Amino acid sequence: MRHLINTQDFSIDEIKTIFEKANSYKRGDISEDLEGKLIITIFFENSTRTRSSFEVAAKRLGAEVVNLDVSKSSSSKGETLFDTAANLDAMNPDAIIVRHQDAGVPKILSNYVHCPIVNGGDGAHAHPTQALLDLFTILESFPNPKGKKIAIVGDIKNSRVANSNIELLSRFGLEITLVAPPHFMPRISAHKKTHYLHEVLDDVDIIMSLRTQTERHTNQIYASLKDYASDFCITKDLIGDRDILIMHPGPVNRNIDIDDALLADERSKILQQVQNGVFVRMAVLENLICR
Ligand code: NCD
Image 1: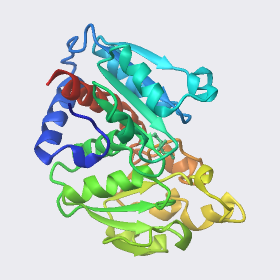
Image 2: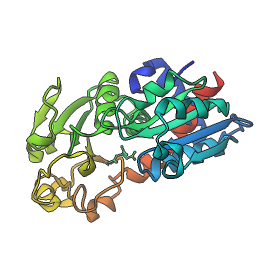
Image 3: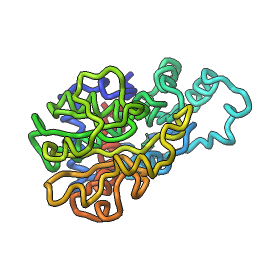
């Protein structure tokens, strides 16, 4: 039984196969590959775009999707994770997509069910489909990504998106620089690091901005997000006429992560990421369920 818990679960060749399928879906070559299949989504942590992206992906391929409303579910009545898993499994789904505020939960669930588990984001650990759709979007602009330079900017230490991207993008040969204030910088990392955005601007092909994960902070690190923004907001003025792709997993804090002017600029790939997310998730589901 295959699961997608983190990006290492797929080899480079498997990812290329998934991307070929995603590309064919994007070209409009869509068949009901998941007709008659049942997919359950269970999101213990808030999400709008990831859950709806999975739901749209599954429905485009003809699957039935049941969203478990966790606020009304039995976990709030004291049911253990093990029992939740056993109960979901008893409904005989073809895949379960799970998001949880604690790292490791999708992996634990995968030990108790008879269908693929897809990690829709667990704590600060991993968000594999986000990294896959980010890589897919990068490949559309840079079909040969080896040696391309990307700066990942913001709350890297608390970001599952950063973790998954660092693993995946370095495997595909991208050179990564981490740009963050000391409190948001992971202590151990093999990648280049700086606290100053201006140091990387002349040297990067891509900037991936991240949202400050205030919900994962135990104490407030900046006096205000405005203070953070004065050092780390990616603005159109700062980028000037440089040819740099601007990415962000969403939700964007406007004028904190990226300013309005740059969000409206054609170098911003954020809506392309959202669009590609559906095709990549379609291909991931097809791969895990049908092969
Ligand atoms: C991210 C997440 O939830 O991990 N968003 C997403 O999945 N599109 C990033 C974030 O919340 O900042």
